[in-house]
Image (cartoon, rainbow, N blue to C red; front, side, top):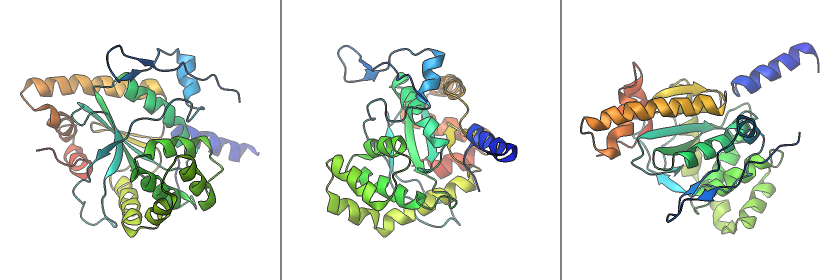
Length: 281
């Protein structure tokens, strides 16, 4: 690899997708008297190792995020999104991902660990951003939404990122069969026009809010393009938790706190809140 190409690859891995032996993290521990699984505390080295071990911890439990109001001028149609965490969590993380993006792999386990570390405070919502530079991205995104319709989004999400070279239709069908899905329904849903329209819409939505490269994150209105490290994202969460606490103290209902925190997050806050949230009543 010549010096110019090597520099390009290193820059891509540090920022995001655009036009060795890994020490696995400690297993999660169950909080006494609850069904919530809390992760064991990890060292900085173990947190870094998470970035190279997608699928090494149990999959998250699927929740459903309702579709947001369509943004005028964007192609496609919004649809329900896979999520994890309480619907009234004070911090909302929207993660725009591409299943062929080598940088998105690094966010898989850290985001799961973050969600489990803040089980009452953080809700993670996945949005598809199928980049045109990746030939199979839209098809794999459709497969993930097909699995979502059968309650197995997170399981397929983990398998896809753990096996980056296996993206053909026969691979997707094999994953569906291994996960115990209704394979005939899975194939129909992959080809469903509504699924294709949702992938198209969410990819256009990412570009409209300046998150075209992947991964893209929105943490209550704080945007981040690319993946830096776990500590950076956790610091965003901590700051947003403090802002959310102050908003809640003004009498805002819990179900509206994350929405209001996003709406009040700066010059583009109104745009982000309108584009991302199914506005809570």
